[in-house]
Length: 293
Image (cartoon, rainbow, N blue to C red):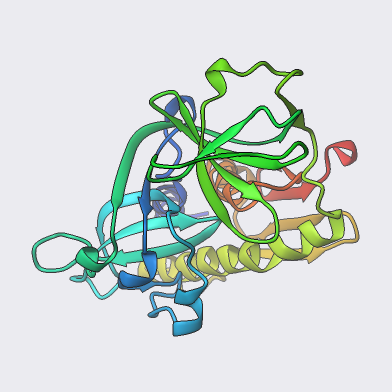
């Protein structure tokens, strides 16, 4: 391998690592969120930077929590300002107007930011009807029936922002500080969703992420003047109980150890709310169940 090739490979690896660094994940499980009362009033683009359809906008529920990936960034056009966020594993872009505010903010009702909150992402079951749900605006309380499942998303100012798991998407606050585990609530080890359904739902966004990475790899490889060789590429293989991602590269896969770890970390965010786990080694990422490890 020539010095020029080595230098290009090292530059490629550094750039890929920078592209894959998960900006949403902060130290000690910290992250920032924005909660929007009427998100359909905002100008929102999907992961492909296309405007959400009217049907997609109607599916946005009140007081939707969005995990902030980058509070102030720009679209790929190079000049449109926006907020980049994560909505339940799906990337969205909230456009900003000329003043820097979210476009459509005046019609969106209450918009609240929670910076440096503690992420939780676990599921609990309410026992004996002892838990009350405070609505997102913190103006009304509702007693939750015994057996109600709540997914904890983050903790801010001592209160847990939760999604009530049921026939409709609903959010609110629960104060667990005065509640006793085992008496008032218990942890749910699994999600209660069939494994086949969990795997089916995460495969499309995982493939989308791999395609995004492959496109960036090809673009960077070409930019570095290595058109004579094939760029590295992540391939996907579906199995009955796991999903495998393998790197095809003319370079030693050991050189991709760091970028493999970063990609695995990105994929973990897609799996939030499932029983699936990720394991990785240089050039190889496996997604499946704990007992298969």
